[in-house]
Image (cartoon, rainbow, N blue to C red):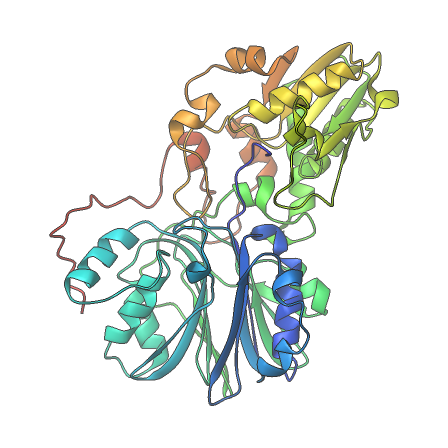
Length: 468
């Protein structure tokens, strides 16, 4: 398996379009890179909610076209998932949908609630029974307890109890609510299509359905969409926004615009700065596809070293495969990547990737490149050393599994067997990424610095949160 951070989740919602569920399917298709474990769609016909959810890729879960006649109505929300909190299980597939005193409600969540276990403990002590292990379920339990009259007030009261990263879409019979946490960790964008409002994790979903990109949902903003139009609220105390810089490094699709910048351009700039910080005499620059491609182009342009595709990715590898009985060295990597000897043989090669997590895959790839005849291999990483886990919606290993948490750059260089190794500096990363463009904020780089903008609770069995 690739030694990478796992993608988190993606959300999509549309209100007021006759083909809502079909468009949600397409939106999820565009957001598939954000989660390949499971997906689901919930639609509203104005009186009832209708749902279909399943394990697997969007195209597989919604293979039967007759599903869309059952997902009727002019509003719907959807979700693609990779589990960051809760196990990989059908019961955790989103959107979560429940019936309660005020009707039905569904919710889809991208992010991670750092105090979810604390809230859950108190809810269970007061009699709540949970049907999933997902942190998102605490939201619907809290909603059932709130006595406020309007949906906007109920949602805002609930979100004042939880802490962490969340880009959320809620759907009731008559309303769609989109909300982003005050720190703005995860992206959420607003668009319009044929008079209908659309929200999504990334603008690439708008491009596919030909929706107009209006703007980003602001950190701490809650948008309520109904037949009366769109209303915007800012119910939370203001904090300095800290959007996740790793969205620009790896997670978001290069063709998306997030945090005010086109991702492709930011990744190229990472490569340019990396080339200035870690010059080397070489004959060719090759990326580890696909995520390393834009940074490698930037590195090649800045260093005036030719860019080539020296590694080819097999795009048709599923989530599982049967290994041959006869041992093939580095099989997990070789089934996904293969070297191009003509590009590599006899050359001094710069290999560019976006990150090193455990180091095991980088080691195998470098051995593959050397076996293809490379004279020298210079590994260049378009992000700083990843030394700390993320608790805001990215599934990262524990700190002891992150190679840079306990090894110097030179020790990592020796382990992965490259001739030289260079990481982009934190200062260089910030220079390339620029200002997030929201409220004088700065990027969250906790996975590099160990500074966590939202603190974690100390769990106690007798915790008293005073929930409503």
